Image 1 (cartoon, protein in one colour):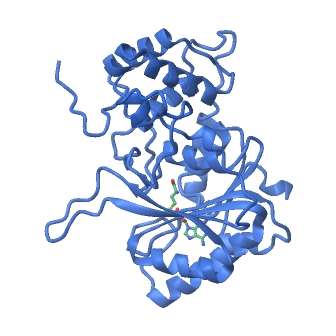
Image 2: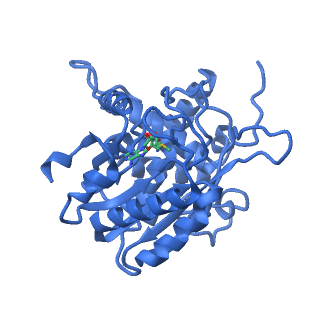
Length: 332
Ligand SMILES: C[S@@+](CC[C@H](N)C(=O)[O-])C[C@H]1O[C@@H](n2cnc3c(N)ncnc32)[C@H](O)[C@@H]1O
């Protein structure tokens, strides 16, 4: 299996994984083409329905074979085939844990029907009682803690719902966007990787595309394998992984807010939907927020509450924080 370690392999996932004799993946995230006519470099995305379903069954079976007994399997899929994926998963004996709806902003506008603004993410495990689920890594601040300041609130916050609306689809102006047509947001992958794997675990993406899963797995200290049929995308994702290393410039030491700390701060801010003004006036909320940030940074970097609010203000002034969902950015 050494040849799979921290690699994006160019090939057809069914062929590449078909040769593997033993389960190795702790977590699989699969975001296959949805058969809706997307233009990919090396894949034709509009085949007959029955062929698409048969193909789906084939790659899902092979993925299940390489998934470790305690492993988790997430599949992103569009409306047209979500039900087929669930039926196939049942046939394969996978156990469903959540049917997640990723509700994104920037949905494509329609004239004659409602704009589509969601993708399904089906979350399965192999064993109904043995799997990794690190709830403490993904909890968010609850309304009880934030709005009502209720002392009975769980101090660790609450689990996010199964409708995820805090991750916008990547549009052309986003910094992390590559030239790839349907790139997933890194922050969404980070939630999945954090909750369903531990550091050092092996994360597999059989439809690697621009390499988002590999990049995030790498940033979160997991081992990764991506498989992608297009040579061009493999090259691009290799570049993306190298750029994500985030090593400090030699001789300069770590900056006060290295890229990974800023990234976590922004993700946490958007996941919790708490405005920085609110944090300044609510000490309890700020302390919870700071603890969550420090936990996520896992001792690589630790901040005080004042440093957190100052940094949020700096990022906002620099236009790097982005608007919270539903928030209007006031012009100066
Ligand atoms: C929806 S995209 C994945 C996007 C990815 N999640 C990201 O964030 O960049 C699906 C990818 O699967 C690739 N693909 C299609 N058939 C494949 C196969 N049989 N084996 C491996 N990759 C394949 C396509 O080239 C495309 O890049």
